[in-house]
Image (cartoon, rainbow, N blue to C red):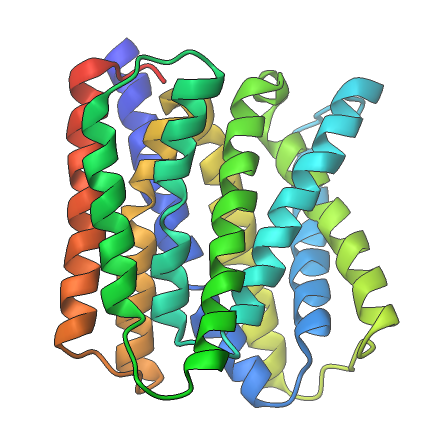
Length: 297
């Protein structure tokens, strides 16, 4: 039974990362169509929260989580919202595949936090994959033109590494995993809708949705890489732990790079191949290391 539970967590972790990697596929066409980033984020989280409401009501789940958990969910929503705005913002400066691959350094940070802050078994082997990951990022970002803009995009993407790592660790270590994942997902997305509604009103405003294509992209953006991805991640953390769930994000950069190359004419050269190979190699080595030491993390 324990093995089946772990396998469920692993499969949901892969589902979460795979759908999360679809963010640029639906958000970039909206940006190219003229919709502002604040409005895209607002609609994404609003539609996601709306989609979650009937599900929670149908399953008759209590929405009362208590003041402490409410406060923790509010903070976690800030981390998740920060990740979302950072990713979509960085698309304006660097290719989406590179953004997502840089973002994928978060499993290494999660492993460090769990080892050094929460007493998980330390492994010197983890440092080598970390170095490989940074080397991979260097190859992916190598370009001799527009270096200033590209570096800004890299910094923004690196910030999402921190916010997403803190989100994953927080879900596991602050009692939230005792709340039903549907309720956690609902609160995270609802807080996000409020954050981005305020953000949009204070910046570029909330543009109306003009076409059926925009409706389609926004609705699918809300469902696949938002509702399904976050719900699957929360359940995966519950069953497989923070570190393994983070590492299973291996599908995220793969999907994002494939989407960028196939649909957005993004360049995939030798440097890109080496960079992606190094990052994924680092992740595979991390998986082997953690599974040999301790899987219940």
